[in-house]
Image (cartoon, rainbow, N blue to C red; front, side, top):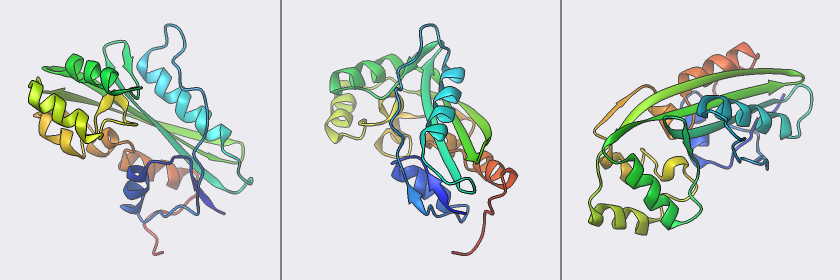
Length: 191
């Protein structure tokens, strides 16, 4: 049995290490991540996690883990910004208000797929022009839902959150450990 992480995210690999799990392979899925017309944030994240898990090539006994993190303001999904201009628009929209961070996790072994979803609420302060421009110049916004990563420089912009810190980072550790155990993959083992 191999453990395959269906994500190129170094954060997800680091978070798995917290529960003693080291991937045997890392295979980033290539799927269309555009939301469907009228799709709400939670079903969107859950659909993407499941589609990613189904798209990764694996043997029947292999365990495949995929996840999707979605940032949302109400019904509006803020994906990974295409450029610095879109990242700035996202950060301005998030400033001074609460938003949701939804991370859906899907684990597949053979024909069996299990999923769990973590929902957190985050408040970002309004950014000054200096803060916004410095953050954009850092490049940290690239490849991150909503245009920020709480575990990096943007942590200074978050005065309040409720939910799973690791879920906001991209992989809720408690939910992931429960899923892996349920599908028959041991966690907390010595490497």
